[in-house]
Length: 258
Image (cartoon, rainbow, N blue to C red; front, side, top):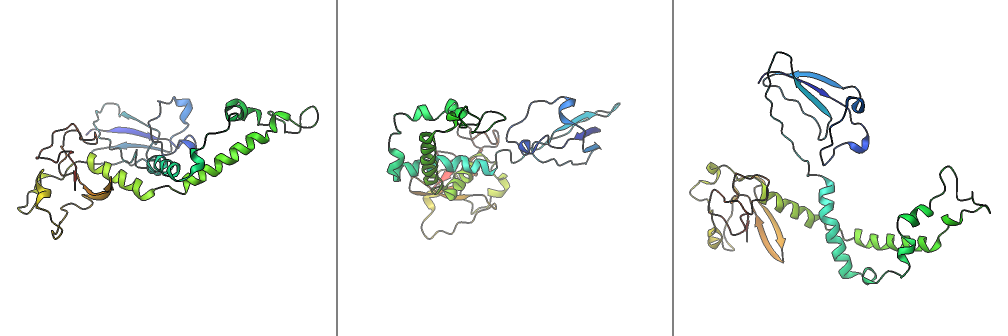
């Protein structure tokens, strides 16, 4: 209700686009000129890509109340890879003996910030600027060999990235966090809910999901598991749900049925 002036600013740099975390407040001299100035009134909607720098203030002589909805802050390719990379490293370490070998005794001498800085040419110069035409600090075959070996080992990890398993992990996590459907959606006489619902399911049972994308089939610890939000509570949305009492009798873990 009321009126409010909104100013929207362009990204300060490409690196700051679509941030996953909120930025600090910026001063006027840090954000430049707005690309949009608009007064929003009741019924208006303003969409801004995640992380868009903006300002809002009431129009003089008028009050204002608005609602902000933020989406997809942690629904990015980076989130998928955050799950996939550790799993790939575990798989590679179990399968590739080279990853389980000890590094050479001198690896701490040739790797690290000091070693990396020594391998860089002097500022404004080149590796040939030394007293004898060569920057001796920039020539480190031992370091080059170690970096090359690490790159090969990293490629072994990359080839084992479990994209499907990572997607299932994120999908199962979403099912544990999301709101359950309204009670009216699960109140049909044929609906099976509660901790004992799985007891009535056999190999010939036909299961109908009452909400599109309302469940996800995953494999956990070599068991096929159906993750769903139907036993979640409605109080602590997106807080995990493990310690929350649901509105209905729920499975032991609140969101998983086998």
